[in-house]
Length: 165
Image (cartoon, rainbow, N blue to C red; front, side, top):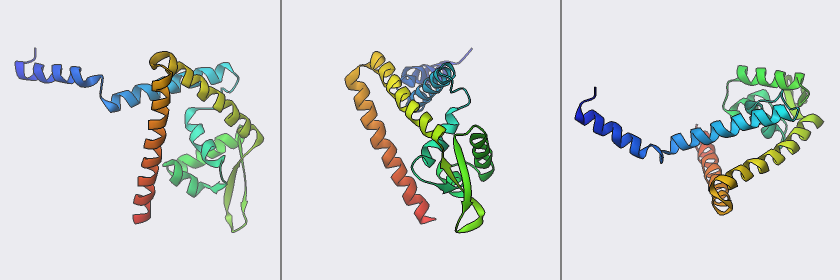
């Protein structure tokens, strides 16, 4: 049994829990990942995982080597190499020798990778619809705007931090 002071602390935590930002982000992240995996499997994209999306989205805009990809994705070179090899074997990305450094490989998206990105855009719209059903159209659009602004702000802060090093 808890003493009165500890019980009061616990009660205070329970009261503020619903508005805890970390909890909210975790629940939304979990919900979207679980939904995506189920939807992707249902639609025949069962070889893709949410962590693959990070790599595919980075290389959909530019061709990079594994070192640069691992920095941008914030994973080790070993983890990135494993993910790259996995996606190459599935046909979503390809590599070629870097003309500037024959020891390095440049990673690029393939036709199948582009097709998945197109499919993913449709899935994003379905997620928006799910959120609209929960919190309404206006709040969903506000959420999208706030997340876009927050994401860009975070990326800018990270860029500045990286430049200091």
